Length: 368
Image (cartoon, rainbow, N blue to C red; front, side, top):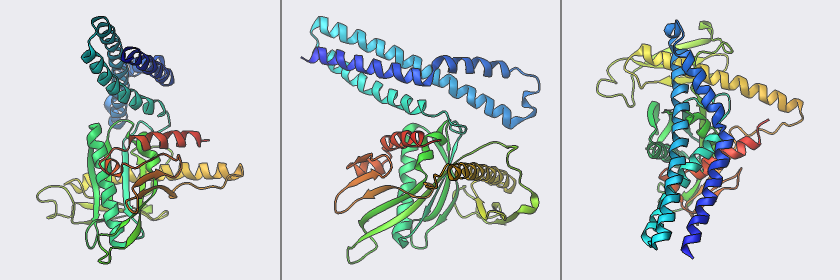
């Protein structure tokens, strides 16, 4: 019968919601909000603007999380009432409406479930994502652009703002590399597991003989961190070059040498920044990203040392993580978690939550 089915579905959904709330530990979040609120009235708070901004950002995201949990609790209660009334009145349309409401609630609860996995040191930070074309010539440049669009579609669906920080066009279309920032709390934690090599198999649109080609693109994801005492950058360790911007930025962006390239000589890390009109602004953001990269590199090296001491020398950074096959069949498969789908069109249109979720769980299981 349809009626008990709807009630059973709701019961299962309520169970999932309860387990997610326990994982998030709502009491702990409420305590965090109170602690942060008390700090907002501290004297001299804005003497350090970066720390103050980080405090208010953390407070805002924690309040939003509690509000989301409260809204979902009310929604599940309303659905329960709707089912009861529909059963009493024998109203099938009401039960159908309840079913639709439960599907929406399930999606929101699954988003919360992803959030429950985000308790790492930098998980709540903005993400800075770099996509670089790899082996495969024009196909690889086109593939890098396709991935870029995929992530932008995902961000748009989530309501996350993005900004392109640097962009290098391919010689015959596509892109050589692009770096963009996702302006959303916890975007780093959500996207961190996307780091690695993404492989595309398809009939190449650049091959006049219609042959199948394999191409690769590398994805790098780092958190945008504030100034850290753990990483010091000496002026003698960097080289700063300026040049005319060639990417997004609006009218006039190409008329001045506002773009900045910072090379960190000891590591060879290069940061290009061209999204701001001001050279000073570009340099400041480039230095922040450089520090973020150096801090991430430091943590990776420490982690590698611990693994080596423990006898684990396996490396996962930069390895192939996902395969996208357009021909002779259609499939997207994550090679770590085993998550897969044949809906390749949906994936390329930004429907990647299932892969983000499975990637986050895989990453959590393989953390030290």
